[in-house]
Amino acid sequence: IVVTDTALRANISASLNNIRLNGTTVASGGLNGALNFTIDPSTEAISGTVNATLNNLILGGGTGANGSINMTVQPSGSILLSTNLTTVPTGTPVRLNLSAVPQGTGALIVNTTGTGNSVGNYGLQVNNLVYNPNVCESYPVGGQLIFSQAGQTGTVTFNNACNGSYTYVGP
Image 1 (tube, one colour):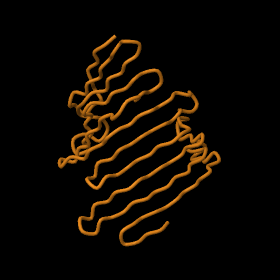
Image 2 (tube, helix red, strand yellow; image 1 turned 180 degrees about the vertical axis):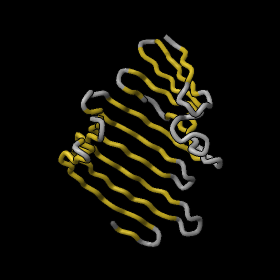
Image 3 (cartoon, helix red, strand yellow; image 1 turned 90 degrees about the horizontal axis):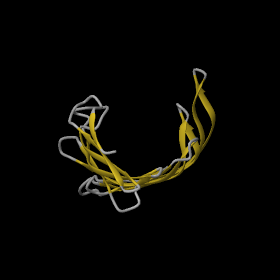
């Protein structure tokens, strides 16, 4: 780790060999990553990147992935996230490009960006998905997820309730 008054840089490489807690595997696989942040001394704005490569990384519950996750933090506080993952053990491809924009209320508004966003065989569009931990720590409180495949579309709309409920319209 390198820290200066205007920068934070680090590289990490970890190989986890069936890490167990109370007899249950909580992590196994490999992780390589790089962190590169700068701090603007006049505005105290933080910007930079976090890039991670997962190699059969499996976490508690048996879910994991291979591939890459890249995050860019912009001086405004907005975050761009790009995933190119294949889940383990099911082999589901997850290709997402997301933008997360913090709001003054504490909420975070998430949208997909660009093209080619998909989970498995489904195209995915995220429209103004609202996470607000001040209102609800566990569930989105607004916005939509739109799944499409073979000309059919299904829309999940979160209904501003903090109970995980949503409305579904589609096939």
